[in-house]
Length: 135
Image (cartoon, rainbow, N blue to C red; front, side):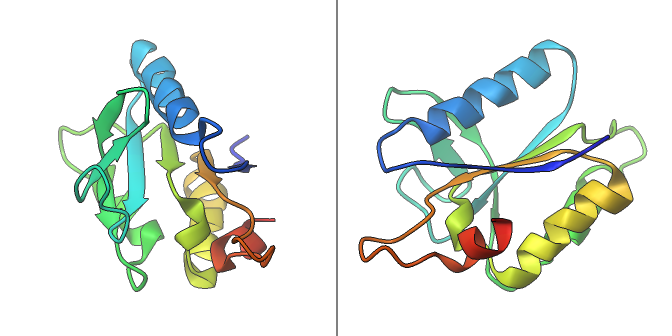
């Protein structure tokens, strides 16, 4: 049974490293992973996820108005393209309420596990929108 997970911790705690390790573990078993990251996080370049220890991977950059359910459907729909086995989301605090619901539909309708990594609160202790709805 697929589930939606939210892993949150402080800055510099290794969330992206853990995401990349998860991607490696899925791929090592011959499974196909989709890594998603907000377009506004361009520290490593748009469409790239990178940890501070030097690990990195290509990712699909999304905007606030993108439908992530449609995105995952398109990724797994090619004629010679295998099914997506897992969706990994970096910087999940930047998701919108609608995108969190779309990811829950990826889990429920497509039966694909979704692992989200991000911050819970900002420097004032206020929840980010994406974090609020993931919790």
